[in-house]
Length: 75
Image (cartoon, rainbow, N blue to C red; front, top):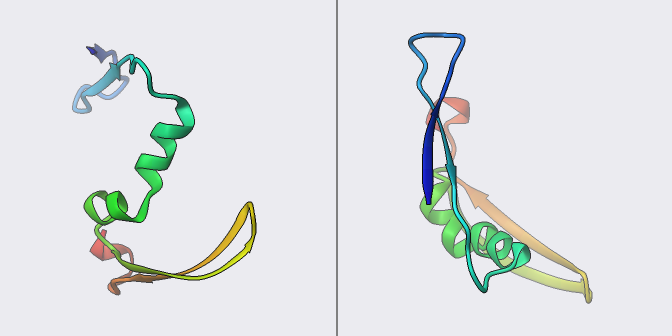
């Protein structure tokens, strides 16, 4: 993994870019891991629960998502 500090127009803003190579892991594997409801509960503070309702077809699922209230101030 490489971590690089980038130049910023605003001197009070520090911007970093991280790059990594995952061997044996495809893009869709990584996407599935990030968007799964188990990991969403860790990185998304307003996410509370998800209930599977119906498998519409082989590519479509219907889920009921429950989030915590509080509006944008709770993020």
